[in-house]
Length: 133
Image (cartoon, rainbow, N blue to C red; front, side, top):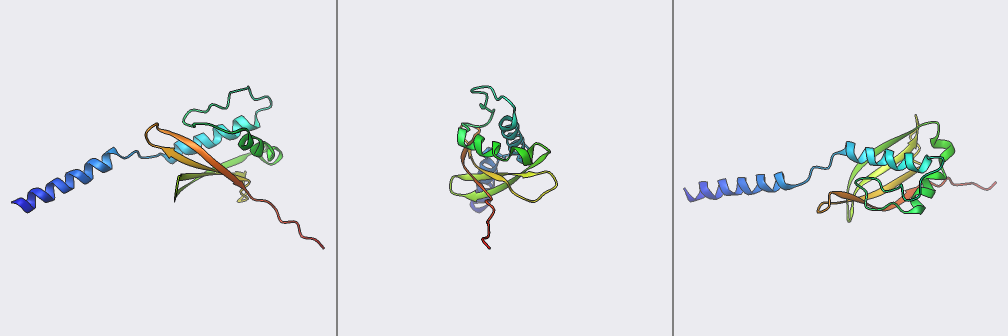
């Protein structure tokens, strides 16, 4: 009887912990990526308008980097989400030109469970290698 009670309590504990964990919807992360790119590509972004819901802060360098790819992104782009398990990083948002696998910029996000928002922890870009002849 004790084993059965201990087993039952173990099952309840695991179920409770799984139920309390926040399931981060990749559609939500993708929407954040689209909002960030749309803001960066806006002709005249409003000052302070980069306060996108669900994002703690977007640095001006991040916006400037996305803007540097304006010519490739204005004709269309895709936003892909990759879940990762790195220290302080939960997701990558990868921005590519439409119909291309070329990754122009990728944002590194950390999900802050206690506040139900994301923090941008950095970005990376693919820099073409120029060969000398």
